Length: 40
Image (cartoon, helix red, strand yellow):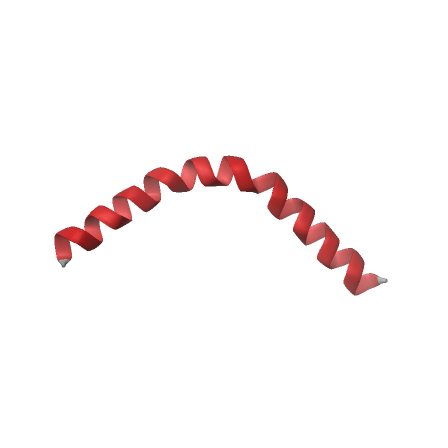
């Protein structure tokens, strides 16, 4: 279990960089949409 969890953490940290590159613009758009919905 310890080795499996460590492996998952390593894989998650490895893919987190690419996920941030992909979803960072999408996250900004979603935040802007939520802000505009809350304001208006």
